[in-house]
Length: 317
Image (tube, rainbow, N blue to C red):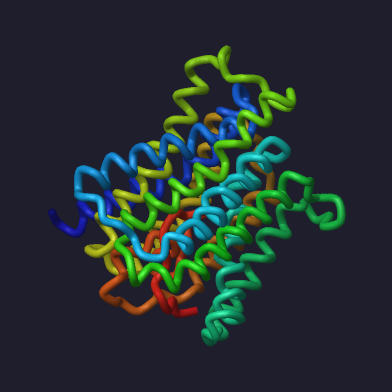
């Protein structure tokens, strides 16, 4: 296959990640947030295990670390996104998801002692300015609880990326992500029966098929398949091109929210989107290493919103 084909594969992965927020928001019209989270994580885990078993399962080292990673992401990261979407728009959530990159930049500097260059600082300032623009000029009351929960989920995802830096070089990407999602699903699974028994959410016996399809689409396609496509293509796509393609993720999220959910796109959203994309484009690409193709998190230092990917051991920031 030519480089052009692999670029198309990477674009398909970006489209999957970009559609995840919109599809989750849509499915929440039929599911409670805890039930929705359980369904989509179970779907992603099933697809990943199917691929892993066909390829040949390998016992991963340090399963306790993988359990911790699974707690951070997908359990807390996607949990924050899913619960937050019950209180905010998919447009806001898509743009707020890029705060993960900002958190990663800070955490890598603090805990991994990585040097932050002036270009990265400028990118961080622009991205934060873009997020603040979503408040509509009123920072005090412009954000709602859902926005803050989404940002908290991004913080958990960033912590996952930082922790995963020490695990990724010891296990291949498919094995790592499969076990990570398995543990995340196990952490979340008991919450659904609790929500049903306490009456906080309805048992999903009467959920319309279209919402089931949306939930399965998020888990099986937007999460699992996007990862597999990404992992297939990234080794053949130049770092700069990969970063440019993955910067499309929040844009796709916003466009799909407007097109399929009829959400309103304001001048503040447009301003924020421009600043956010400009900011993350300033984050530099990492150096190629033997593990670059296994990095299922930040792709060449640019991280899709709540991406599933483990980072390189020493990402350059």
